[in-house]
Image 1 (cartoon, rainbow, N blue to C red):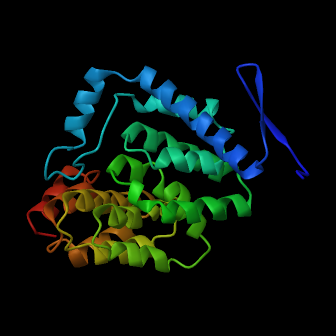
Image 2: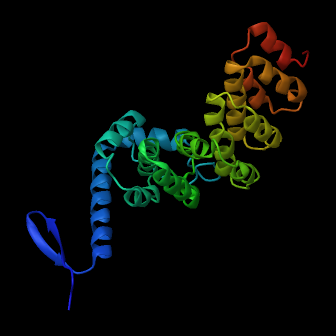
Image 3: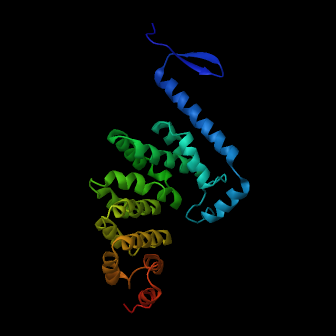
Length: 263
């Protein structure tokens, strides 16, 4: 004998369902499919083609195999407000999509939930992020979420996971490591960024050079002497791209001294 019975209302029709867990899963899938249909309608083939090239999705490139449907970031950010009541479970379904814009929207939704959530919600989102880290697999996905979720969560906690990620063979995990420290930098905490920057000095990937140089530059905006102390020790061994990003805002004369090795 059934103790409870649940119903799904779809298109005005009532369907009985005896399993609450399956009912919730079905409703979650319905909602995700609605979002996916909405995104498909917003897609633009010309924009998609441009993104495919811009994000290097060709054979052997860093974004190999990624699929774009051509939705600009401001449009996705506007949708965050519309789907702000989505559950973490629904968002994670979207995050596991093969379509880039669906993954980006999912991450933006997670950031929004994280920002508004209590400790329990934040812990759940942080843990879910790490469990699904393989889907955070392009630089814009990393830069839109790492500091906002991982960095924010670890602000007053152990940073051990960042050092593990910095040593990963996976490009995106290493970028998540350094980009997560942006949250600390914004709060004038520089030590983790400097330690991880040192770990990444000899990284072979240009996208790591850019991210690391960017974070060093952000330190310099807040405390120039701290950045210069690091640069004077390491600038001769830094990859050129990393150095250029780090000194981008320096006065031209000083910038040239660093570039010519005459500091």
